[in-house]
Length: 144
Ligand code: DQA
Image (cartoon, rainbow, N blue to C red; front, side, top):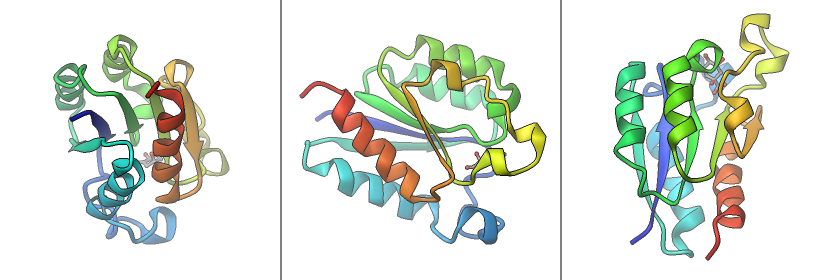
């Protein structure tokens, strides 16, 4: 069965409890289930990984080159996660960068993403819905 990779970076394992006024109340489990529902019709399963450490995220990406595409919320690694950036440069399939919050409406240190130039596309500021929209984008981008 084809698998879609869902990658979440540091501090996203506590979604639901983390600053809910900024990131919403959905947990990572809720998000994984929503993405899984979105892609089930195509016969895709979701592999969900979350790590606080950049090295583990790099390992996870290297271990999943056989997935059909990826949804990546890098958390704060968007700003300076150079080894994550390089791992994604070698990831052979389309991937979408997602941020729950509108990073450009927030502090200026969140305005730069070192990953964005490599992404197939970005979804920003739409909360947990953004992951479902990213899944729909991958359904459209990945040939049947
Ligand atoms: C985030 C935005 C980042 O700036 C922040 O460091 C996060 C979450 C988001 O989903 O809105 O950890 O990626």
